[in-house]
Image (cartoon, rainbow, N blue to C red; front, side, top):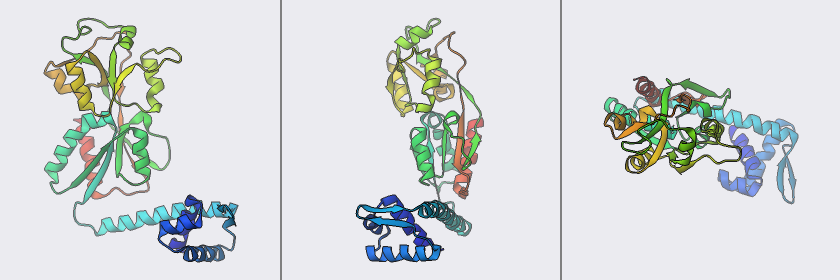
Length: 298
């Protein structure tokens, strides 16, 4: 079947009207109508029901549209992979990071990539896991690095776990709670700050902090800018929940301390590198994944 005609059918299905679909694929409406009619002749079945309020897919049309999306995806992957075979330059890489893995891995990653491949073009996005996965499915990023607990169990994703590491509650040196053991109730009543947590981890945090039914998570400040959070905690009586490695320099310098919370279970954090299984990683992306694994294990 003609790939352009399949693309036209998908556009009609997603836009809900011939006029809108024609604008999307840069055709006149009569030309788009002829393309759909030719596809129907080729399929030997009616794919669209046309009415006063627009067009809708028939049962056969829904089946063909679903297959068309897969075919177009594979076609795009093939064209991209052939381009990679012909490509002899390093090129570019687009990476999505969750806030925690970005705080730990991103600075060292950028330094190492620039040191080894100074001409490599790098674009990074720090966001919450759901938005990053949407960008991955839309092929706007080559791969993402997110909390492993937020990775969906689906066949189309390639998932590579990174080594787990400890987390904790951190405060500035001299904080009133830094001197002795802190109970969970005191912790919940304090000014807690952290990254913007995805819904998938809310229940885990509620159990961790022993929140009562209906009680909101007790975070006064949430931001994906981990550097800003660290600055806040160093200069105010706020408490930071995060990975130990992300504040290693501040701990070593004595600017931050780890709170002793005996009631708090051991906090471990694990991240994963995730990409589309059917999409071959570019040479640049493959190198970046290798660097991330090296940095994470270091």
